[in-house]
Length: 213
Image 1 (cartoon, helix red, strand yellow):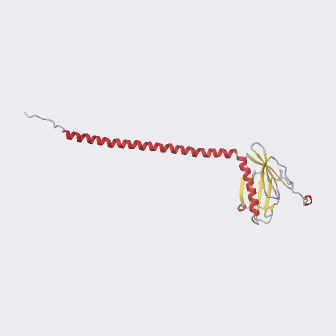
Image 2 (cartoon, rainbow, N blue to C red):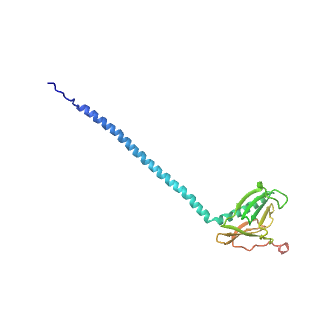
Image 3 (cartoon, rainbow, N blue to C red):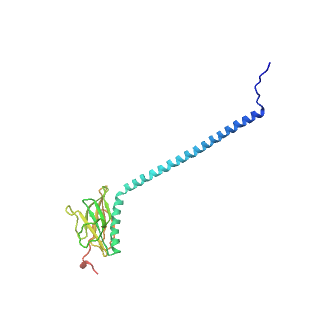
């Protein structure tokens, strides 16, 4: 009677089969390890991006808070700088400049005077600086060194500067958020513009007969 026998796997064949499987597993294992390494690097990258984003968001918030805290000083100094710009530009040229303080509109502007007739309408091309005051920095009145002052009927003040200096000096009284007064003092003789605390007393220019020399 014929006898059927199943083919026996030789030792060489088994070794080859096992090595192939181990090699296959090794490939998968290496790929899995690479994927883990790649995933870990991506996670680190995401964390770094999140941290940088938080810093980027926090910087404007802190800067905004700082500017908000010093809003009055910033706005008052901008007005002082504008006045100094007018005096400096006029001293270095033959052009005339004018800073207009508008109490009703709570604003001011610096313009170059191009017309020979004053007062004249402000042309758009003449405007160099134009800013608004805020609730944290309000202008209440202006007093010139010839005792001309703004009132309910006269809500605009004009500081004009030429090559020889300011046409008139004076003070611009501001209030901060706590209703504390400050004075922007314009010195006609020295052309110096300063910010001083309080509603300061304005020094009037002396007449020639009052000067001892």
